[in-house]
Image 1 (cartoon, rainbow, N blue to C red):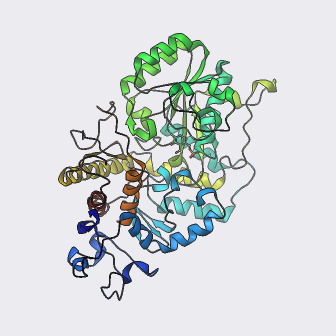
Image 2 (image 1 turned 135 degrees about the vertical axis):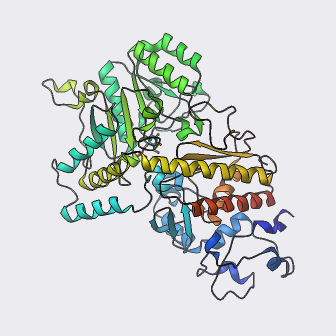
Image 3 (image 1 turned 90 degrees about the vertical axis):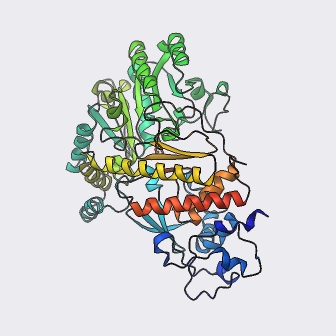
Length: 508
Ligand SMILES: Cc1ncc(COP(=O)(O)O)c(C=O)c1O
């Protein structure tokens, strides 16, 4: 049976007073599990198991359940409140997600007491890590002065000036409460500016959940991803495959005069799961200019991360508009839409009210987000935290790629800047062990069966590492020790997956 591969046992399930009885280990809610160097030298080694008469090893799923009784219990309550018991699609983990009670730096602690190396990092919002002192001090100081004035304030101006300074293509901007609001407003501004309706998007690129960017026309062979959309919205969408310059040329030739905006994730679909080629971005810039189409870089994830000035600074290509969120608000809710003043100023009051775009929003530029955002941008505008995060990501990718090779499992880790992706089954690793830079990858990552993807996520959690789906958002405060732990976690997870026949030297 596959599950006798004892090497997949936990790095160190520690329980004070544990008497060595394997049956006694799983049930207790008092279990405190630490991994790696902090494990205190006590390893539940294969010998322990063998000496208990060949008791079958727990599967990844069984261990996950055993390790997280408090999270499971809380999930029971959550299911009575929220669909699936979660408040964000990405937090949906079968059979239940972990619940976290505190976080600091690169780590977070769940309610079962596990210390976890965090690569979700606030869904990418925390380039400076959890509870960075500059941010928490600014927020605490602002809390004492009030959380909402319902009025203009100095901090919002400072925040806006920082965005302008760090992202030079932003002449004017408006703050929003999220990235979804930012892309919605960017597209509305582009439609108003051009008097055209259609939006050109790239297949599978993600821009939040507003109607304009949610579904894909059936012609794209991927059914509209969301019921509940008005048909007109999809009629107003043109979706083309990323990196296909011929398709882009043709679309612009045939429909350029009807297209208000072209929007895409600045480094490729799903934050570079498949990198966009800079040659494609350059061509998009030329064609949009030629056809009077507003070019929007969605830098909700890449903004302030790829470089202080975002992917546009790294490419040296200037969009007409940019959408931002996450890092811009320093880990609090917030987003921003900015770009050419002549477009953004459609929001400005004017004589003919029918000519302007309204922009209310109770929490726009609220003082707490303004405090967090301006404190964060002040720390990162010199580009040093981005370089630190990217350097750690490079080392991490190289070490994890070596694990795949050493374990004889097909798979690759690759990325750009501080965003990494784990592709099970991908047979080609990047030459430098890190990525393909601003070029398309040589082959698309193979589709991974859901059970293997889930096992990877759960298996890494069992080993004390939280992935962002199958990726990693590396921060400026992840350490060498985090890299060590993650390397060991992947090794153990791959062995456990192999023991369950979820992978062989590909993906089963
Ligand atoms: C590229 C991109 N655009 C837009 C959004 C939506 O941002 P928000 O979740 O703040 O609404 C996201 C969220 O992850 C994103 O990754």
